[in-house]
Length: 329
Ligand code: AMP
Image (cartoon, rainbow, N blue to C red; front, side, top):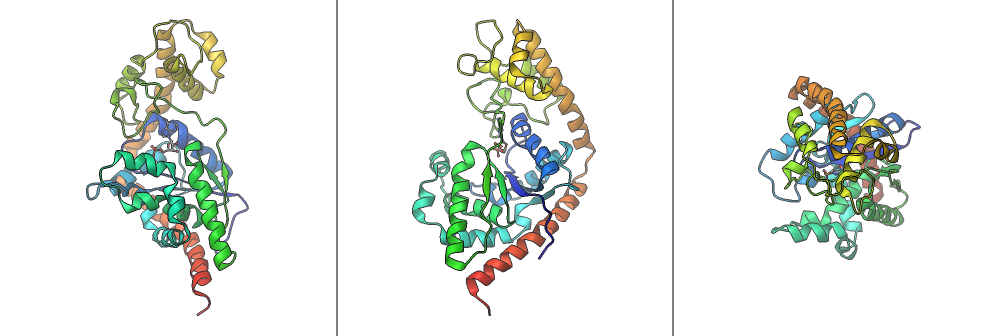
């Protein structure tokens, strides 16, 4: 058995597709930075998940390394957290098979994310359908205690708990059943041009999306051209003033100041946009500098070390699963 710290173990992943956005930074990476300080955290580049839709050869791994460089530049610290590429730990696929065999076709069919995603894909892979079983394996493979998930992933976590409980009742207590933890206010960053839509990596709206790699001048321009509305007062009202509310959220996240206090400070959109741009440039500029200074070879070494640490935990859990299923030989 590997030694276990007394801290709760948490795990979180990001799909290596597209380019990292300000939305990822606010919604995931900054939360991960808190988790690495308070828990025994594992973070992974979910390359197997990215294969549920067709990708050109080599693209997913290359993107995984690139995303890892950004994560490191943003302050994910491999001394505190375990950072690795999912497919480097083969046990993910092995446990996923066991999870598919304890999951029912009916419960997988009820997953709303599958319904949404299969509508937008021409080729619907079997992997897209069984994806929650791989996600369950990602979590259960590390005896994870707590999983920080947004509202959209709650159904998958319930599924994970259900299959873990079912596995344990068939084969004896083997898997740790995780709890979920919905992050408190998990700020949602909206598209700057379509502020009722989430800012997204799959950017069909490049002008509304801030990428961490955008030149500083571009970031400034995108924020200054953000859609607001025809009124001119500054107040937080997501429904009637989604653009202005998004700008206030962004400023609040960057400065740590209260949204309503910020709203009271401004009477015009121009100065608000200028301050949002300045605040985020101050955060993004040093990240870009660190990113530029990191070599691909260094990142790959970090990922290999991370995979070795992750494998040490995963192989123990997988041994338990094999013994439970096969009995003593
Ligand atoms: P994705 O880019 O969809 O693979 O998401 C990776 C992580 O970033 C997930 O934890 C998302 O919840 C988070 N995330 C992505 N876009 C946003 C956004 N616009 N606002 C807040 N969080 C986001």
